[in-house]
Length: 32
Image 1 (cartoon, rainbow, N blue to C red):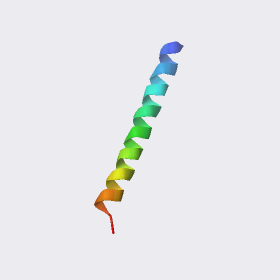
Image 2: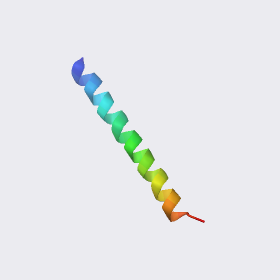
Image 3: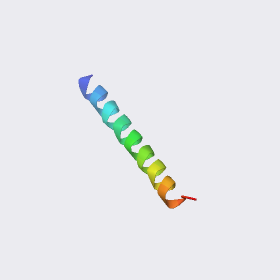
Image 4: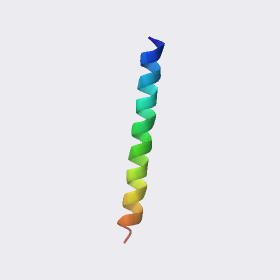
């Protein structure tokens, strides 16, 4: 059970990091 919780936590952190990276990239690349 703990392994499942850890896997979910890792997935959530990866998703949030990816979203923030995409957001920053768009802010820089599409800067007007």
